[in-house]
Amino acid sequence: MKKALLIVRILMGLLFLFASTTYLFKLITPPEPTGAMKIFNDGVKASVYLMPMVKIVELVCSISFLSGKFVPLAAVLISPGIVNIFFVHAFLGPEGLPVAILLVFANLFVAYNYRERYKPLFKP
Image (cartoon, rainbow, N blue to C red; front, side, top):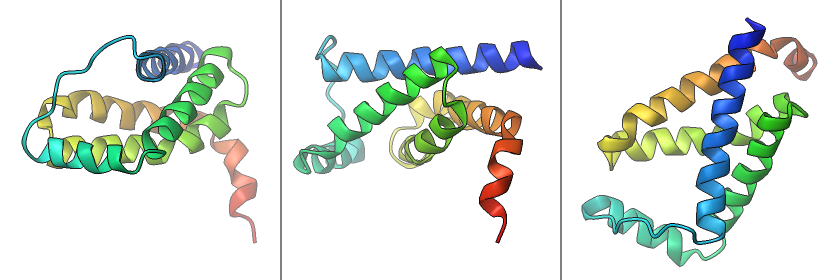
C-alpha cells in the first residue's frame, strides 16, 4: 500500500506542478475555450485574483505531494480545487472528465491513507 500511495502522490504532484507552473510562468498558450466553457472562463478571468490564487495553492500542494511533507494538509487544501475541476468538466467540458475523475479518486486514496491524521478533527 505504501508503494501505491507513493506513486499516486507523485503523479498528483507532477500533474499539479505542471498545471501551475505552465499557468504562472505562461509557458504554454492554452487553446481558446468555446461555448459555455468560454463564458465560465471569462467570468473567472474577470475576477483577476482567482486563477493566480488557485494556481499558487496547486503549486504549494504539488511541492508537498512531491516532497512527502504535510501531505494530509495538502490533500485537504487541494480538495475544493479538485471538486471544482470535476464539476466544471462534468457540466461544461466533458472532454476533461476522465482526468477529473482520476483526480477525485487519487485524492480520496491519499486522504484515506492518512485517515488517522484526520480523526482528531472530528472529536468534539
